[in-house]
Length: 162
Image (tube, rainbow, N blue to C red):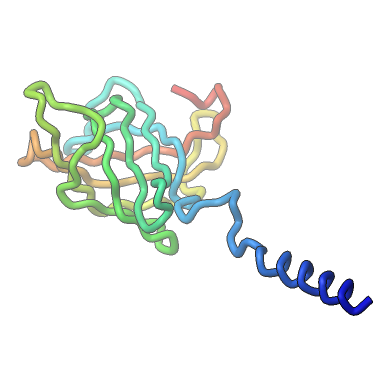
């Protein structure tokens, strides 16, 4: 009988020791991850004919970095940027684009400054409150120019898509 109680105690102790201490449904980047409708601005003037989709999402390491990916829609870049989940900011200095090549087949470097996400500070095309994204960007193949990228969070409602 004591053997059975000892066995049960060991099983219970072992099962309690295997509990996960994290939520597998979230990432550290959850507050800054989204799809965004943005435009590229120079001196306050839009440089693209329409808003384009970009994405921010967690890296596989799930640490203090996110991927910032323009999906080939703005300047052909995909970089890792450091983020602060509390301040909802991110930045990168001379980050090497991991995805797209410039016409001369060399990778470009991208610098991101003044980046921030403002919760519910924007409205979609149909008036739905959504997050806002803003950052300054310098591309190594146009290093003398500082652009701004700004836009709104994608609501996933088709009437809000561009």
